[in-house]
Amino acid sequence: MLLGAAGRIKGDWLSYSQSDLNAAKAEGYNALNLVVTDPATCTSADVDGVKRKFAEAGLEIGQTNGGYGGALVSDDEDERKGAIEFLQQMCRLTAELGSPNTYLRPGSLNPGGAWQPHPENRSDRVFDRLVDSAKQACTVAEQEGVKIATEGGVVCPVYSARRMRDFIDAVGSPALGFNQDPVNFVASLDEAYELKPFLQEFFDLLGHVTWGAHAKDFQVMDKLLVHLEEEEIGSGLIPHDYFLTEMQKCAPDAHVLIEHLPENRYADAIKEFKVYSDNVNIVWDEPRPPTI
Image (cartoon, rainbow, N blue to C red):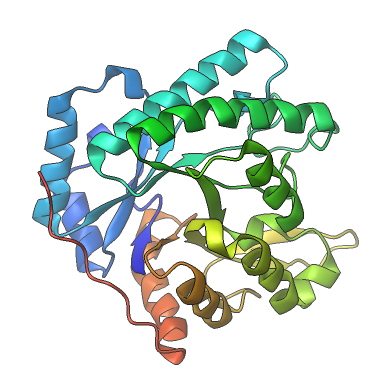
């Protein structure tokens, strides 16, 4: 597995500076994700320039993340068509970059954002729209020879390990897999306080289609109603050593990307994360030789 970061450098991929990439490498990261605002406007020169910067820093290009919002499940067909086309363009760009996968954001009907709840998000018709959108995107992914990594969460149309398994089966494409990110799926105190069986279900149902993972942590807050908040790695409840052991078994070539931190906290986060990986003898891979 390769240890990297998502969000270590903020902003669009074309704004990543050589000094920022060098700083991430100096902290110990070996892969960084790319956030793409508009894949339709990029050029071959853009792709070559970014690949050269990553190669000079000794980094691999990680997962690509497109900014198409939550419209893959929109009931406005024009909006949904636009999101599908955006994701298809992301597949083509991902192939050009040599990235291991591009990220599928399942979306939401909530106008406030793709990671916000809505009472219809768990309905069959929303699920069916997501399946149809993913099928259209996977046609291009298969043509381009790239993977699509789906993430989900308790507020999303794919809200559990079982629902994610159903989604991947319904799409039926070898290009489509799962991005392990267990914090997103925790929905109850029972799950929060008994995380190993909760995590194991994701590996049992989705281990063989796991393309990558995001690493973060969470805590149960002292509130009358159930309230969960993200925490820095090592300050929460996730058994990272157990999670990494299972990742190594099912996806030894995956990128594991630490995420959701201020830029100045990534240096400490990787040190803390390596305490867990060292405890279970995870040997992190080195970046591949660049191909430019």
